[in-house]
Length: 160
Ligand SMILES: [Zn+2]
Image (cartoon, rainbow, N blue to C red; front, side):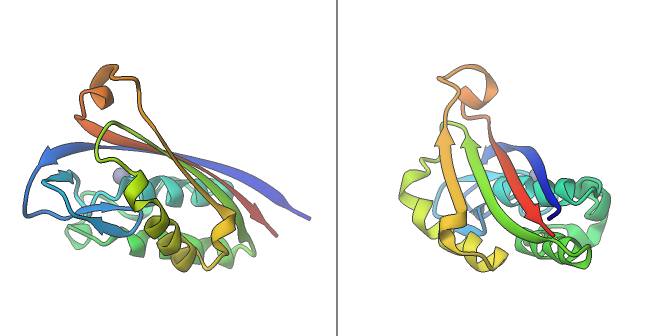
């Protein structure tokens, strides 16, 4: 059995914007805040896609989904994740599990946790008990502690 681990890490600036949707983990969270980026800036899906690509020996998502490409403007990151999963499957791997940690002060993740896990299970086509979603803060230290942005770390295991 060929078992590989992958890790992904992503950060996006958090801005006040009442019109731009706040996308985290493939769901829209009602908020006056939004994540800034060329795509929809879904920090969780970016970290997860990067982990999957990394486990399979691919380059990072920026290589395949350039932030210079106008076609990727406001791109729904579910598409990035789906394409990364397709690349993984083309190499003969399946996703075994993922362990994800959101890092930041805002927004509070606990009210949205179950809905995000449901959405990730649907996108990744795996059981929800194979998805761990946690949240932590930086104890008010640094930029993330001042709610200037949101980070996400993801670890995955893929199996052939
Ligand atoms: Zn990103």
